[in-house]
Image (cartoon, rainbow, N blue to C red; front, side, top):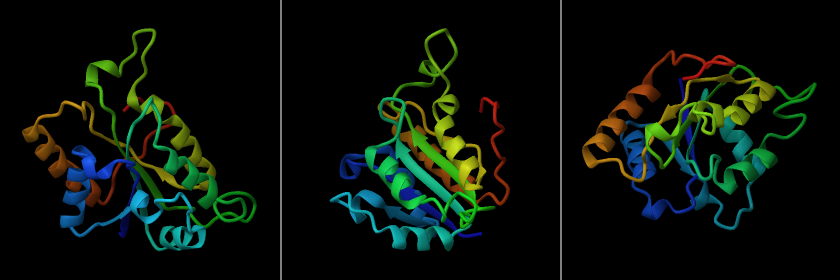
Length: 182
């Protein structure tokens, strides 16, 4: 199974968590594409991105969570690359049957992502991506979540990198159900 990581981090050079995760994946032989490096001006080569997507089996969107969402370039990338007639619509079937997985790193600790009347789980915050997956015909896999990115210890980060590579190498990552929590 060919896995491609589409990395979206606007400040990658100063990243600790996403840099470590991406490095671990690269060292394991997994393709990592840093989209902010590829498109520093925000001008996305749609044909190139679609070709890469067509050539992979497992699409991984890796990004830090900002204000409960993704970096701006990821949204721009989705808007341009997932075209009607290519990714969805009556003839848009190019991604059907592929796997889509998110690898996210929210800054706050686990305790910030639970139900208490004003907070949500990370999985709930990612539901728009799950809806997109449904529209483009991909299998939405359980996300890989690194909480507490702003304060994670070196030892915990090293462990998380190991876990990430193992997760990416899993042949059968479970799908996330529509209303499943984690």
